[in-house]
Figure 1 (cartoon, rainbow, N blue to C red):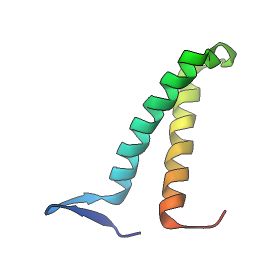
Figure 2: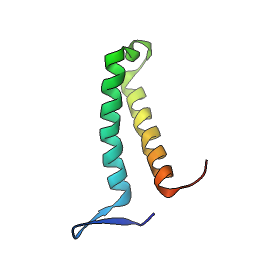
Figure 3: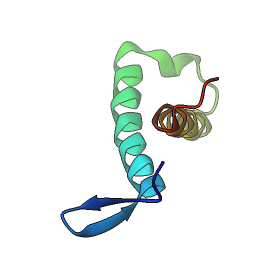
Figure 4: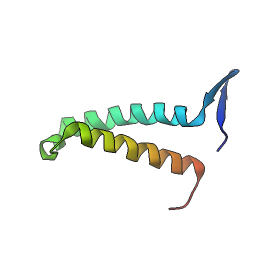
Length: 69
């Protein structure tokens, strides 16, 4: 993984771009889970959402780095 991405001359940290993408992916998954009623089974929704964000962040980071699990 390169330390930064070059977007038309603007250098963006790779982890920052991954964090930004995982945030929007987390928003989509949260809305989907709310729509199907999954949050009725969750005890502490903010804690679950935070944990889901970090799981998505880690999965995206590992998939970009191509590290086998």
